[in-house]
Amino acid sequence: MKRWRSPVKLLTPVGEPGGRTRLRPGAEHVTMAVAAVWLAGFAVLSMMAGITVISLLSVAPLIAATVADERGTAIFAGAAVALAIASGWWQDTATGAMYWTRVAVVCVISAMAVVVAWTRRHREERLARMTAIAQATRLALLPPLPAQMKGINIAARYHSATREASVGGDLYEIIPTEHGIRLIIGDVRGNGLDAIRLAGQVLGAFRRSAVATPAMVKVARQLGQAIGPYLGEEDFVTAALAQIAPTGGLTIVNCGHHPPLLRHGGDLQPLTDGEPALPLGFDDDRTAFIAAWSPGDRLLLYTDGLVESRDLHGAFLPEDQIATALAAPDCDQALDGLMTAVQRHTGGHAHDDIALLLLEHSANPPSSGNGHPTAVPAPAVP
Image (cartoon, rainbow, N blue to C red; front, side, top):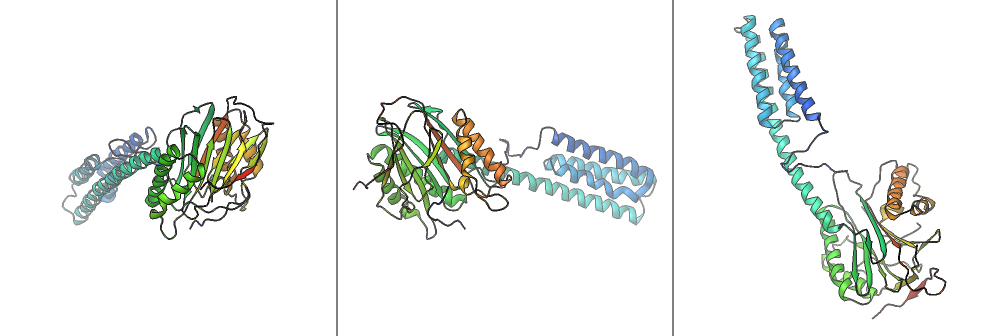
């Protein structure tokens, strides 16, 4: 079970519209060809060798059932039964008890193959519907983001630790407002429909509050109040909220989440005042962390699947690998490099979802001071 703690140091089956899950291109035709060759080969063999190999004709509809629907499988089943009967007449053994026993075996197994094909098709249709729902949910929780917004380059990535799922409890959103660009990244405890439902509540509340509320600490407070009624006894949501003001300043409000990382001049700095914060809904007394935002700076927001990814020896992903990835020429390349580093570090066995959001200052706002990041905790706005 995923437990909240104060932050410390730093592929999906695809269904067709018709409901069938596709194999690799050509694999279905190859399988059907194998079934046909098997049927023809053992039909000839049974007519030459007598009743000894009749039962093996039933393997053909079983092979077909792995890729064909019940109608296609029934064709192979009917052919297998017909050839089994014909082989007895050909060898003049149709009156023997052993012959009819083996024909009965072919009939039973062929009928079972049709049932298997029907069951498989219905499961694939259900999987295709669930996949479509998951993809629609993913678009709601992890919406496509523009490559640039008001002089800021943007890139995002999401990777599910569960092969069967295309989305979990991680979330992010960016909204332009009159107060500046506002964004959130969050992580809902758990997974499944309950986590997705709670993540949707968080995003809905953020989209309402981010536009209408001047102070970021009030936005965080309203998020906690909005999702409070939906939190179970063991539920929690960590989140990091950020605002990039038109003047170039960064405002961070942390709600029990890992601190965002600011890359300035090659240095990587966690944006935090050092005080642990509670998740959304557990504390209304929030503080804002303020830093400068200079041209060329990059801001990385992430979920714990990044910094808590472990190798086979239990070691966390080294911070220098994060810094190296973020030095890539553009944001997309930086996140691709970061995901590659995680895959290499974990050996491809990540145990938690990963959501990444990277923003780069590409404009030239009015300069203030020397442009270096400054950490100034700000009191909560009442």
